[in-house]
Image 1 (spheres, rainbow, N blue to C red):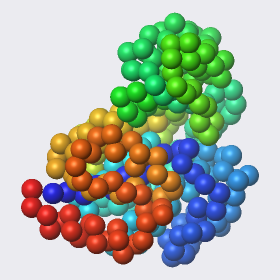
Image 2: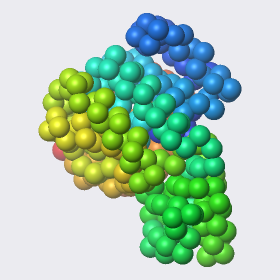
Image 3: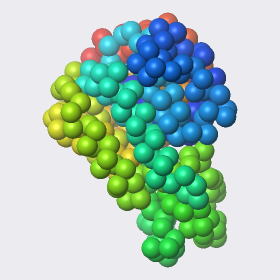
Image 4: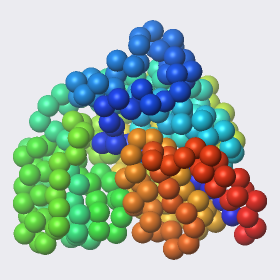
Length: 303
C-alpha cells in the first residue's frame, strides 16, 4: 500500500511555529531570502499574508526532511502545494521561497482589507451554492473556494457578502459559519490578475517531473507533466480547492497512511472521514520515530 504527505494551507499558522523546527532548513531559507525568517512567525508578523505563506513553506519542507523516509504521494492545500512540489523533487527550495514570497505579496496587495474567507459547516454543497447565487453580484462578490468535506466548504469574497451568506446559512441550519484567519479572498476569480502575474514569474523557473506522485488540490488527481505542474502552482490561488476529492483520489490509489506536516491537524480530521481503513496522523504531537516506522511499514505492506 502507499503513503501520502499532506501540507496545510493558510489558517493553520501558529506563532512560534518555525522555532520548533531544525535550524538548518530555517537558516537555508534565511540565506536565500536575505532576511531572518525566524522573525516571520511572531503573532504580529503573521498578520501578513507573505509571512504566513513563507512560514508554511519552510515548516513543510523542514518537517519532511526530518522524516527522512520515502513516501509515495504528496499533496498540498493552497500554499501547501509549494512544499509538496519541493518534496516531490519538482521545484527547488530556493525557487519556491522566491515564488512564495512574491505570491504572498501579490495576494496581499490585491485585497489589503475588506475581504477574506469563511468556513461553513453543516450544509451540503448544493445548498451553499444556492446561497452564494442569492448574494453574489458585482458589488457583493462571494464565491465557493474550498470543498473540504461533504458538509464543510469555504467561501471567499467581500466581508459584507460573506456575512450575508453566513446569515442565510445559519437560517438553513448550518452548525457553524466561521471567519478564517485569512485576509485574502483566495481560490476564486477575485485573484485572477495576481495569478497571471505569478505565472509570468514562473515562466523562467526550472521544474522537473515529480519523483513522487504529486496530487493537485485543484484537480484532485496526479500531475506529471511539467507545464501542467507550472500551471497548477501558479494558478491554484484563483481555483477552487477540491480537498475532499484529492484525499478520496489518494485513498482510491491505495494510500492507507496519511501524515499531515506542520503546523496543526486540520487535514488529519478531514481525512478521517475518507479513510475507511488505514492510519491518519499529524506530525505535530507525534514522535518522529513513530512516524518513520509507520512510513517504513506502509512501504513494505502488500496491496
